[in-house]
Length: 118
Length: 162
Image (cartoon, rainbow over all chains, first blue to last red; front, side, top):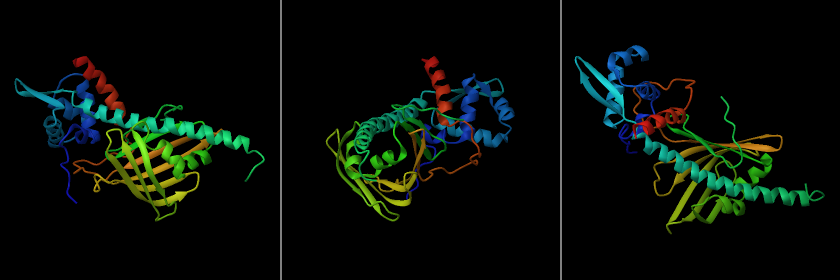
C-alpha cells in the first residue's frame, strides 16, 4: 500500500501532541527556540525537528533576532482543519437529526403496541 | 472529562492522530437506537443526512457479515460505502470496517457504542484510520484535551491575526 506523505499538511503536522504543545506555547506570543526547549523539556534536536515540520506546513514562521532564532505562530492553516471538522460535524448532525425523527416514530408505534408483541 | 451533549448536537473530537470520535445523545432507549441503526429500511431514512438520497442498503448483521450503502449525493453522483462486521453486542456495540469505494485503500475501523441512562441513549462512533504518521515521538498516554481544545484556543489567535 502506498504510504501518504506524512507531514505534508497542517492536519498531519498537528497530529503530534508535542507539536500542538509548541503551537499552544507560540499562541502566547513569539518565542526564541531555547525558551521552547526549556519549557518542553525535550532535547533541542527534537524540538528543532518539530519546528521544521511546523514551518514546512506554514504553521510557524521564524526570524533572526541577533543570535537567536525566534518563532511565531501563523494560525491560518488551522482553518483548513477546522473547516474539515465542521464539515464532518454537519454531515453527522444531519444524519442524527433524521434519526431523531425515525426514533420518535418507533417510540410512538411502541406506545400504541403496549399490549402487542414481545 | 465529560462532555454533555443534547439532542441536536453532535460533538466531534479528534482524540488521537488517527481517530475521530462522534458523540450524540438521543431521546430514546438503546434498543430503539439499535433498531434505527441496523434496520435497512430505517437506515435508508437517515444515513445520507442532508446530503442526498440513499438508494440501497444491505445489512448482514453477523460477525463476518457485510454491509453496503449506496447514496446519490446532491451533486448527482453515486457514493457507495461497504464493510464487514467484526463484533456485535446487541443494543450495545458494533465494530465494523468501512470502506469508501472511491478510495478503497482508506478504510476505517468503526466502533459504535450505545449507553442508555434514564431512557436516553448516548451514541458514540469511534472511527480509526490507518496511521499515516512516521512518528518522531510517541503518543503520550492519557493525552489530555484533544485537538479540538487546541484548535479552539488557536482559532481565537487566528481571529486576532485578522
